[in-house]
Length: 325
Image (tube, rainbow, N blue to C red):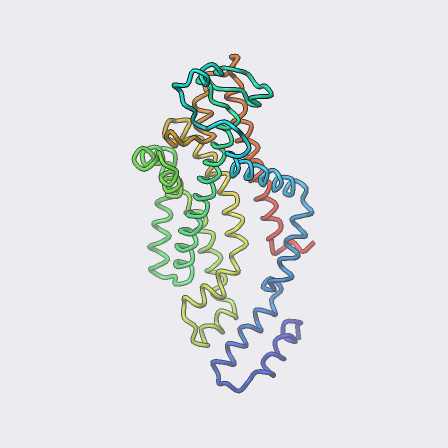
């Protein structure tokens, strides 16, 4: 017998005489414990070990934490307001000053401190990226789980709708929808989520199609477990790693897409400001003495997305069930 069989038999032998339903429920737990990829404690330790062995992933996480803290505590880190009073002569007198000890990133054309605006823009970009990743993942997991588990006509309807959404020209649709729903941060999250949930839906659906034929799922059905219980207790935990990886990478994609929309004039509207808005506002300064207004938000955006991608790659390697080293 294999190790799995040896581990499975003692559970059945020690089962209490509580009837066939109780016996089958204990059998399900035994089967799950017999599968190495379903041992939570050892899996978490192995995943953490694999993540820490990737220097770029660790460096990306450190950079991401630093940027997130800077965004959260933007009002504490800088003494200047994000939207100063433009009628104040003292503010206007500070306009167009290059980087200095007083203004590390310089000031813009109306006297606002550029570092302050970059930090507040970073806060908005992170909020949009995280919000979009969360909403897209929830919708995608729901669609993929329902279609993958129930199959038949339910799966056909959901997947044809998903395929149709994938065929839409993303940027064109986003520009049209953003013109109606965009402007606010919640509006941008909804806009970006509309065309971001389909890949995760297809991924989850594929995983469910495989997992629903496994012995532990068959045993759960035989014990009388409902479809909702099987999905929540036995299937979703097994696709959590894949979903987390996709959600992590979607954060960077959403931040870049929002920046593109802002550059095209369909991003968040004042008084809110994002990194994309800052880049859009400074597009004409390239090659001039005010080019720092373009460079700093661009560099922060580049570093942010790069850090998110490094973390995403590290999470993907850490949660890969085929990597045991």
